[in-house]
Image (cartoon, rainbow, N blue to C red; front, side, top):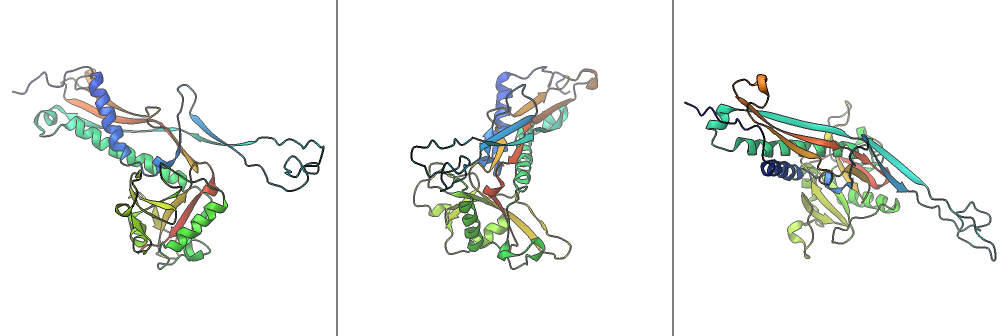
Length: 324
């Protein structure tokens, strides 16, 4: 006869809850490819559902006389006090959303399974939610207005199957970022931009003679999650969640969207700092009359609040190519 006291605990110990939280966050973070480079910002408690990022607008350089310009002049007139420049900011806002899922575990499964079902469920939920958050981040980044079509094509429908990703496309994108004064990443290494590619685009890039894989690095460097290699001041990171889709009914070519960007080009809600991912374990019998025979327990996970947003579209470029 089965043990009738199985899963009748009405509360989960703090230690076990913390373990599950860490397990979910740990597995979720393995999926954070797009999310890992965003400018993170915590969402304070009781502060509403809207999160704001602000940046200062650059001053307009000028060699005109300060007395003749509206505060932007750099050329001083002897004895004349120049006009003051005014600080201004641009504000980008996003509304946070919640994401979550749970699984049911029967008392029979918990009794007879060879594995720790609740623990494994937490791992699976972490992987699922990590993927969801990376999708949300990726889709937000794709809203940039800076688009580069392969081989200087006029539009997406003009990209042909032979227009795969090349080092030329990367160099053009880097040139654009530099001209737009996009800041670089450092992360304890030389200044660089980031490019997130899918496996098909990575395959094309790795055939280039200038490609340097991670194992070929001469100096010990901090390695990003998913990092493949680097060349020409760009660090390449691979994501299996890269976006690729047909570019319209006029051609069967599938467009691959590779995002190359500088620091602070997009923002995300700080997941760890705000404890955004939490697990919820409901033991069998905890639902009262809804589970009269103590047969069902659940393990769930929820993203408390998350959002992602492009902060400066001039600093993030969507390079659209075909792939081999």
